[in-house]
Image (cartoon, rainbow, N blue to C red):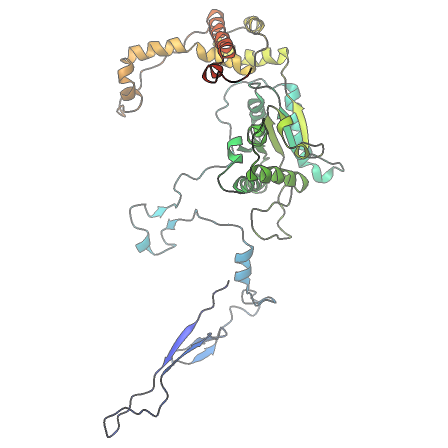
Amino acid sequence: MALTNISLRFKFPPLKSSSSSTFNTSRKPSSIVCSKPDVGKVANEDGGTKPRKKLSEQSSWEVKDSEGKDYLYRLGAESDNVNIAVGARSGMIDDVFIGDFLGKDSDIVFDYRQKATRSFEHLQGDYYIAPSFLDKVAVHIVKNYLAPSLNIKIPLILGIWGGKGQGKTFQTELIFKTMGVEPVIMSAGELESDRAGEPGRLIRDRYRTASQVIQNQGKMSVLMINDIDAGLGRFGETQMTVNNQIVVGTLMNLADNPTRVSVGQEWREADIVNRVPLIVTGNDFSTLYAPLIREGRMEKFYWQPTREDIVNIVSRMYEKDGISRKDVISIVDKFPNQALDFYGALRSRTYDRSILKWVDEAGGMETLGKILLRRKKTKEVPQFTPPEQTVEALLESGYSLINEQKLIMETKLSKEYMKNMDD
């Protein structure tokens, strides 16, 4: 509701004295008159009014539409930008309200603004990308960017699914880095909220953010949702929430209308966003809502690395440790039917003894807090020397991990706690 400025003019009768020193009661009592100011006139120095001077004979700022709204009103109503990052900037507002506590050019949200896009500076080194994986992801991205010029139906979503720990996310990130893609990445934990509709709005907002990366930065961008079946899948008697339904509906709507995405503002004909490819990963897509994964909306890709892929990936992983390809083949053959993350865990497990040795040399368990957290700035953390990797040490770690896997599957402590349950 628009607020109208109301001016109050108080009219009081002049006070006159009579010969009997009493007030003249023949006048009407004082009144308060409320009137809307004349927007076409301004007050002058004499107390009167004069016509308001127009900004320009050709100015459109004062032109009103059929509803009587001027340009600034319509501009504010159509804007979907709520900018809270301006802050208390010196020279922009009165210095009295800035103070010295936050500085003369302080930002409302300081440095805690989250960068929505993801970069991959941490991926240093030479990694192996499976050719079939690269082809599928690259073709999907390119097809969506060429969609306006291709006379075919192109699915907006690429669903990459397969067994646990097979490197679906890592391989995808390697491809993004290779292709120069700056993606917006979400996780399954963001698909649920205590507020109804919040996850659906978040997806649309992240989609528009990726579109702005394309338009403003001139970079390719992708919206990626990891482990989507963990957030939307139906397992046994799990209950579907309102947010689950809204998220599924949002993804289906994006697939059907990839260039018209609203985050709550009024629809505008000129509000066309860039088409952004969408990639989701998961383990079992059979738990998802069937119309979401149908042909035309989602293209499915089952990722199960072959023995050759595993050997190539693990070889690149152990290459800097001096482990030859022949030794890698022997390790892979010793532990068949294991996921890719198993071979990464081997290398991590070999560090355990060296870390315990480092703790003893640094002063023991009792001094860890002082060494790692409360040390003086001038005092450096004792140097840690990585262990030398050998095939024997890796095999020893592998057997230890296998024994832990078997122990979990054979013990099943849940049955000890609930003995009345049927097998």
